[in-house]
Length: 414
Image (tube, helix red, strand yellow):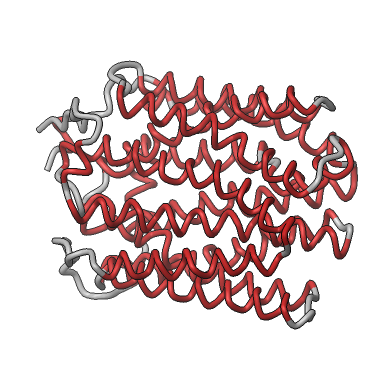
């Protein structure tokens, strides 16, 4: 069986459930970006510490690492739509807590880290549920199209969210957290109206083998293992998001709005690439193109780290986002199409640990390294490391590099 990408660029939106999911995810992602910009700026404004900026990522990553066996199992056992809705309600409560702390002038790093830890726990459950729910909302022939639009939804939020967060924070953090609270609540309501989708449930009894099935699948499927681990190490080394408050305030001398523009720039490149891929999907040489995308991401990171000119820095970030989107598009399509639905939650949970390690732990890597060697060397070293990872993985995973189309091979068709 071959799963062909639909030529209709809006194929996924023919399904009402997916349309509701799309906008709910956009609102949640938009709110998350507002919170990320606001908490980062507020933390640096209060502490002037790169170390604390790195800890913001760490406290949000650790729950995914510690709970992934539980989150994946729950995703495969219970209603994924309900899990997503509950998680969005918890996110709204975290936004309300940050709002309360700000209104009451109660800000302290420890208290904020506590709220972000709860936010991280929510994301640990929501990540696998969202990734596993999306393929249940459209037929398999429309999956690649839905993945491109999923990515564009996130990246649109990544463009507009940071800018809105910078503008709102400029008016006052109360405005920023209030809008985030409203958007999280609206996302939860939209998810509530999604009809319960069909979902294959694993029939085997709960056991250690059942819980570890996601690891077993990834370890045995070298294409999936290579794709996930490539993203892990590339973004772990190349991530520079945590240090943008430093670049905005000290290197490029910009304010909160400037920070929002820097945070939005990768999203501009990513959504442009996502829209291109939605209209002109990758037909051949998919594996090689993914490695090229990672290489572009690393090179652009290097340029950003060396730049002290605003326009060049923003241009580098735009290219960085475009390169990353190529990798994301290929990786997410491969994982979804090559993974049986009955184990998808547990595989997604492991994938979320890798994504969290690459993003949040990458922020901790950048922040801790910047506290020792400085922000610029931390970003430059990371960019070089990403380039080396792309080259090394191309040699270590030849089966991934040689993938031509994004169709499931006959041997794995089900």
